[in-house]
Length: 607
Image (cartoon, rainbow, N blue to C red; front, side, top):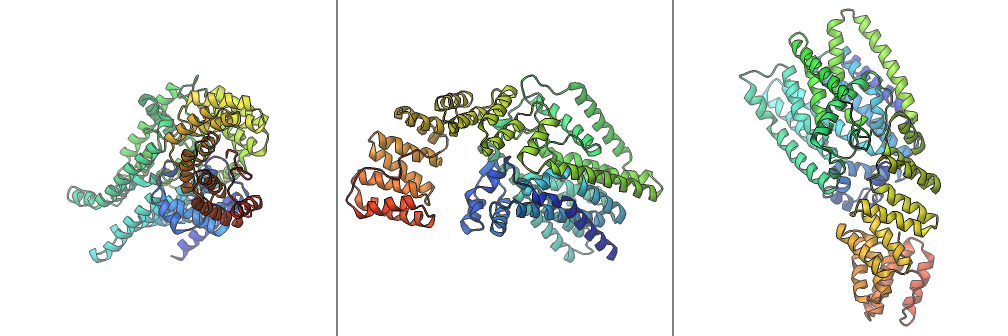
């Protein structure tokens, strides 16, 4: 026991030390801004935030525990402290490494094998994306509960009596539920439990029925989350972004299995995003390579099957790898990536277990096994240390992605956004144009070029790019709103109103569309309709002082003076909290004098 505790301590400290440079890294513009700038997250841990977390499909996902964890991090470190958020990820990964060791030790009762597998899992470069990317907290959190469920389940099957078995079984079910609430990728756990049963020799003709019945609560929970995730992805539009032919998805799945195997052995050329070869103009997945990958997968499967009696752990680990990758392998495509390093976080435990058990079976000299393991650990740790340097900021990360991949329009887009955030709009436009050259049918780069030209004051060009964005995707809400803003600034109120209304049809909770439509209607002297739009805007953002001010002005213009003053007072209270002195002065003036219709503090569209 003492030796195992020492190993746990060494694994935790070594893992945390290896990944500690991530604490000095910035957030990146690939999802981090969406997760960490969400108003509910930035507000910290609140009752309203918790309620929202359990009812939202925001970002095409249902993972309430992840949202709550981000709220807690914000409460502890603030919303903009990247060091605190990255530290949590580092410590959570180190904890997961210890959980992997504890689980394997319970299952195999082989301390050396368990320690080597856990160490390889800890330091492999494919872990970098999961740890260094703040947005992937969901994967780390889900894995922690996943491994906890496995530990509880092994304790359940090793219990000496029914009285002692019910608690670990209940804990396994609870941990599985928490894992699913963190990230639904854990749905494969029931299958992994069956593999554990097979390894523990619990499956026979006499016991098969009982073993299956034990899994019914787990399978039911997994099925429910599969349905919920499907709905979330569909409503969030994630599935439509990767609506590829079935044959292409199958080719990519086989191709990706092979690439994951290759990257396990030779982890070079890792990228934050891997383009979907075959889905972009002028690209295709190499069919000979797909055939070779399929042959390798079949050969490994047959070999593992033939060795099942001599070394059952090889087959169990291999099946673990194959099965746990299924939700992320792309047969049901979500998004536009072909594969992702983070998808190996759970599957790699099985693959590494199979590899180490295979070597320990056929390498008789124990010292040779330890020497080989030590060399591999050092080599992998060096590669991981190098890989971490690319995650320092947007420029290092996406420049590297462009160096190691071809046709990477997503990396171009993210690099362009980094230049936009720096204020280098000409360079951003150059990168967006390069992205369009790769994927000419993708709308967002056209819209983003419009933003750049608008920031440069070249409004005519901005309008043309917004129109091009809508030509490629008529459902692009932001393009409708920004085009309407430009049209309104040019005096084309009717055209602006038409685009604002379309934006609201597509997204009824679009605050900017409602607010700016209110301005456009007010300019057209349609005060009643303007009042209705401002009312919706205030409902959507009750703490927006400008919206309340505009709502009050429209009410005043409609002769509803008492309600107008209510909005002015509410706006003044909000403005005082936010120290918006110019608006406070105007609101005090409006509250102290007779009604007028002249605006002094507002009237411009909000962007």
